[in-house]
Image 1 (cartoon, rainbow over the protein chains, first blue to last red):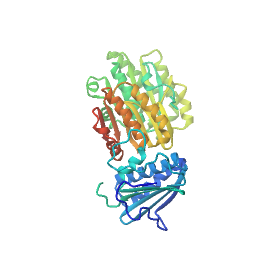
Image 2: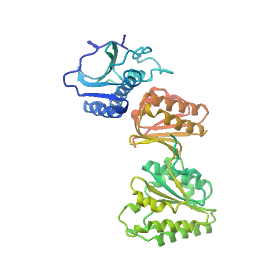
Image 3: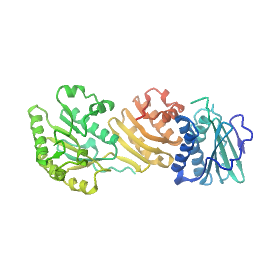
Image 4: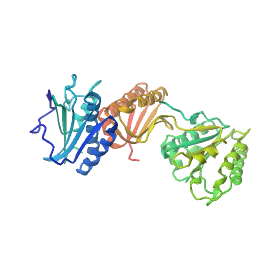
Length: 149
Length: 289
């Protein structure tokens, strides 16, 4: 199952380069450390304070989804490519039955479920989600020279 | 998970000699402001001895307490400890206790029904001669306050004072006071806030602390009045907890009370996405402090 809120960047899930900025495993007990690392690398990539916070929030929500609804642990990779900061969150959990993917940005605030993915849709410039037998991979992309601050 | 370390500052009576322990300047300012507010509301004379008096009065105003009228009529005095409790780097317990006894007498003469004194003890952390007389000072206060209508709130930084010192003075106090704490660990602290009423969150907040957050918010809602959620020291909040704060704010606003959400600009952007700032009665205040 795949879902994409808008025109995707080809290819949808570009492979992380051999030496990504960050490659870090996480579980419920290490989300704080993950946020700290992501925040530091997003700042080093030149993003504004607000966008650094947005990147950190998006990665946290995706990682928390993996912890709560997926394998319980996973891995984050960060790299820059083609003018974007790529944040890829993967876990080995099965596809979530009620997971309809990342909603389009225009969808209003959800009343009950999907708060995390809704936040991701609001703050990313591009995002995509893929489920496969190997697990779930979400890639969120943030423009390094964003039109919005 | 709601643990109250001793009494609440709002429960103090006019005969108490209370020992307040705090962990951060914001907590000290909050509890002190509540002590002063309640004293002024009760018609008592209030003396606030802070480490440095600069900014003390402004701190009250920041918390919705207008100190001007009380200062003008001599009901409130805000001073530095230096020059009253100690002179330069010299402390003598007898002199300090004598100063307090004099203030009690003066407040009676001025027609006040009682006296409240808040004393920041941070001066005792500096090189001061006679600091070993601290237990004698606390014992002397207890003696002066006996059968009086005076209350003293001695304020100790629990991170900076060593446990031996705290233990040596604890026995002379009638009560121990601290902020009601819903959750605390090295990364997150959720406390009740007293002035203005509400809760205070510092650190990073995510779904793993949803349970204490729910309890804190529920108690704030049950106050039945205006509330302030102070999050200026909160550097991260996730989607779930943002929604919980937003829901609580909407509940309070729906009851025709005002809600102030004080937070960093990055966090405020998240609340704006939820439409919280558009709800009548809810104000999102950005603060870089």
